[in-house]
Image (cartoon, rainbow, N blue to C red; front, side):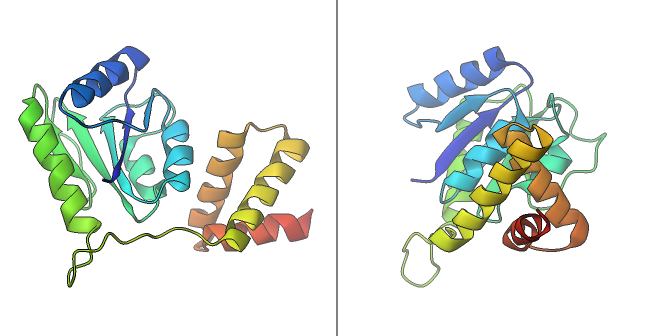
Length: 179
């Protein structure tokens, strides 16, 4: 089964949705109130969905969608679906919603993006160990030199990679070389 991350503006909202998912047989891997925590966890997991509100504490859902790994999909829970431009790859669900709608969206995203079309195998898009070492070393450097936390360092690497149109690993290598 794919991983599930729940990130909402308040931890109480996130726990409520996490509890409802638990009751329906879906165990969230992370329940949090910061998008940076969700991003950090998504980089450690193989694939899955991130369920989020339309408003988050530390970034917009559009920024979150731009930063998540390609093997994760965003499910946005929003009261106003019409007022905002939503990313094409994200699923939008209007609040209030029935739990069956959320479950259907999770199952649909999992089957659409994480199954190999020819034989049904689950595809894994994990980084190899060498790439992870570069990323971890770059984060370590940023933590020591700039006084960042681990999620802040990861977010900094992701944002820099996006701004420079490079991969996360290339950006990590640049940080290591420049230090």
